[in-house]
Length: 113
Length: 113
Image (cartoon, rainbow over all chains, first blue to last red):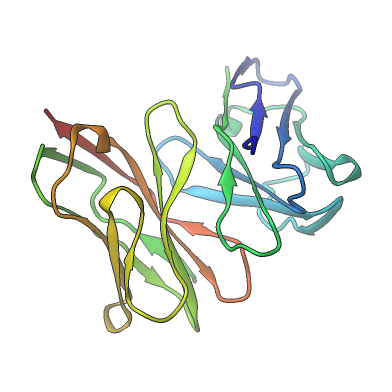
């Protein structure tokens, strides 16, 4: 089966600009997660979708971050406006309802300059 | 607060050496535990997981981990490492019944040929 796809793989933007990250989960996986790793720190939970609904968005840092999941398929994470501290690697993962383990994407490395 | 600690941030070993990476967690209640690996340029992959039962868990590529409840530990082991085990290793935990992970900060392993 195809894995979790994220793009772009790298993005360099200026402070104040907008960036949209995209995640295509494994087909049929209702659960989709976003995580972020700031350099040198642990990978931290951002939010969880079940189909198109936000199940848990307790990890979203602030209202500059907006996540959507259209029709329960792919998801986007928009950062607007981007700040320097938003730099890091953004991971997406998906999971079927029958498994505790995630399948991760390769991540998007975001650099805000 | 719930947390996962990985005390070894960087480990360098020669091929054929034995490996043990420490992971301690701080959780109330029943916990599910995981080890993930990220090889250079690749996505996070599940090595092994523990939910219940036999505290010695065997995973892929010859890795194993032992859950010691009294020590709140879930250390990763491999009797003989190979150059191809060079990667970053992440310990993660979730509360039973949820699927949201808390990760440790990761351990970078370098195996010298």
